[in-house]
Amino acid sequence: MTFATTLTQKGQITIPKYFREVLGLRVGDKIELGLDQKNKKVKLERLPTAEELAGSFKVKNPIDPVKLREYMETHYERF
Image (tube, rainbow, N blue to C red; front, side, top):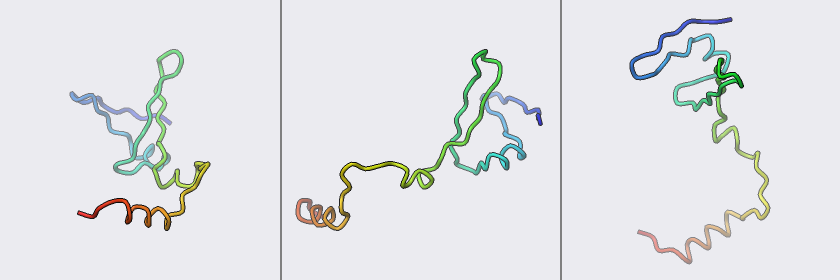
């Protein structure tokens, strides 16, 4: 499916509602634009949010949040 859109003076386009719905785009979402090898077609992809990335990284030395708070309270002054 294809749609036509217009480039504004500021170089902006409106992403048609159909594409926003299919890609799950919401106001404030970050998107990635890319070009194919021949620089003829644009690829558009929604980037994951911080919440979606939560838990996807492995931590070598996890920090106990209780010990971290105790350390912060004993080593830093409150304003």
